Every structure is written in C-alpha cells, then in structure tokens.
Image 1 (cartoon, rainbow, N blue to C red):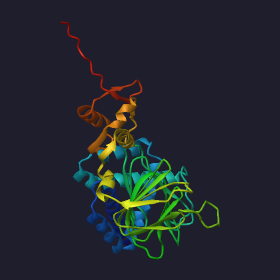
Image 2 (spheres, rainbow, N blue to C red):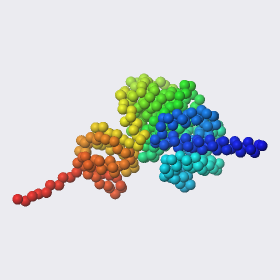
Image 3 (cartoon, rainbow, N blue to C red):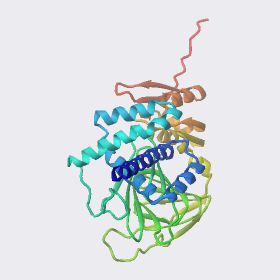
Image 4 (cartoon, rainbow, N blue to C red):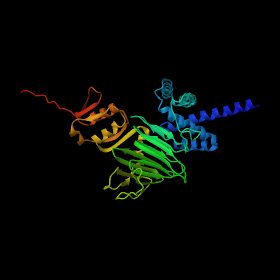
Amino acid sequence: MNDRIDNSTASLVSDIDEQAACWDARLRAPGCTDEERLGFRAWCRQSPLHQQRFDDLEATLGVLRSAMNVPEIRAMREAALDASPESRIRRFGTQWGMALAAGMSILAAGLLWFGTNSGHFGTEDSDAVLKFTTAVGERSTRTLTDGTVAELNTNTSIEVNYSDDERLVTLRQGQSMFDVAKDLDRPFVVVAGDQRITAVGTVFDVRFENDEVKVTLVEGVVEVEKEAPHGSSQPVVGRNSQAVRLVAGEQLFTLVESTTSEPIVTKADVERETIWREGRVFFEDVPLPDAIAEMNRYNTVQIIVEDPRLGEHRVNGMFRAGRQANFVNALEAYFPVESQTDENGQILLNSKQVHKRLVDY
C-alpha cells in the first residue's frame, strides 16, 4: 500500500516537474505572450507544489549557467535550440529534466555550494544571491521566485536578492525589462548605478550603460530616486535627490554619480524602446556613429568608423540586431560608404572614393 502511495507521489512530482520545465521554455521564448504569462501565474496558484517545483528548477538552472561548459549539458542546450518550436516544447521537459539531474549531481558532489538556511536553492528565504547574465548578442527571459518576469537584453547582468521586506534586483550592466508581480507588502526595487527604481506591480525597462541610466515605463507607476552610498546612513542631498514619479509612457534619463544635472523626463515611444525584445533595433534620424554604436552592442564583430565625415549621415529604418553584414550592406546602398574587414575581423567604414577617369582630347 505504502509503495503504491510513494509511486503515485513520485509520479505526481514528475508530472509537475515536466510542466514546470515546459513553462520555463515558454517564458524564456522571445515570442512569449502576455496570455502565456498570465497562464503561468494561474498554474502557480493551483498548488503550492507548482510554485515550489518551479522555484527549484529555476534555482538549479541558475546554478547550471555556471556549468554550461560541461559537454553533456552544452549538447542538450544545443539540441533544444536546434529543434522546431513545436518539438522543442514537447522535448523541453525531458531535456531540462536531464539537465536538472546533472545539476543535482554537481551539487551533491560538492562542486558548487549555496547557503543552507533554506530547503530550496535560491528561494526568498535563502541567503544566496541569484545571478543571471547574457552574453553579447544573447537575450534571456527569467521568471523569478515571486512570478516576476525579467527579460535580459544583450550583455546584461543582474543580481536578485529577495528578503521579507523587499524584492531587490541590482542591474550591474546592460538592459532588462521587468513585468513585476504584485506584492503590496514587499516593494520591487531595481538598483542601477546610483539610481533606485521602486514599483509594486508594473512593467518597466531599465538600461544602464556608460554611466547613463534610462528608465522606460510601459504600464503602472514607478518612483526613481538617487541611492544612498553603500554603508552610508546619511540622507541623499542635492538637486537630484528628490524621487521622480513616472507614469505609463514616460521615460527618465539621468547620469550616474552626477551632483549637478537633474533627471530628464520625456514622453517615450514605448514600442520602439522595447523592440529589442523582438531582436530588432529601430533608428529614426539617428547620427550614423550612434546607430553603429547601438548595432555594436549585439555582436563581438565591431563596426568602426574611420572617416569622421560619416557622422554627417543620419540613419532611418529597422534592422535585425547582431546582423552586422546586413546593416553594413544597407549603409553602402544608401550612403557614399565603403567597408573593408581588417585582420581581426572588424569592419572598417570610410567614405567611398570616387575615381574620375581622365579623358584626353
């Protein structure tokens, strides 16, 4: 009798694990819809075991990111990426189930260690800080333990540290959009540089690069204020010390560590600002060097402007992120520009040389 009960329980857990793996695949897919995210949250509410097993999976996958050079795990990832969307969903439960088992073996062997204050790796009552990163040209979607969805753009690094009083995410670099799960008792806070963005339940995008922070609010309300220096008990003072409240469709731009300039708040084209989620970049009357800098974010092959006169040209259009060759071909088609590749594989841009043929009379 007890054996039958144990087998039934094991089968139930196995089914939930496979469902959790399928949800992970859907939520991290670039084409994940709002309806699918709502479906995920409804699935989590169906049973505490659903949320628990999903949390265990997410935490273990976070551990596995540091072990992606293991040949078996890398092979499973590549096989999943090569599969068609339909077969990928069907196979993801098995693929990640194997990866989960491999990850647990790694943990059991003592190769990786997390704090032991909790029975679940990376859950909210654990001392461990979860770290998620993307490489240049990579995008990733992570569902945090409270149901908040974080979409990471190229070359991005975040750290997640939840406590009983606050849900804290530190954006070390790059860009991420957050679809925040509502929790009135614990505000959701993103720290980028010396800027602190606070929300309860909303959707917003944060970009932190080159000492510049840009916050774009898609829906809801957030407050942005200057963060007190680490370890300081003194209040923040200065021209830009007051919290700025953003409403949907607004964007805030500010400089990190600036004591003189105030944050700039403007209306934003939200669809254009978040089009990176579709793997695209959009330019409207953008100086050529700035457009190139944006394209360079998505590829280790860099486009280098050698002739400063090219800064006179302005770029319009939508381009696939990371497709450097296609972008350069478009530039050569519409501007007097010519390119060549150097010995390091970088693309050099110069003004096109016009050779005139001399005619003897």
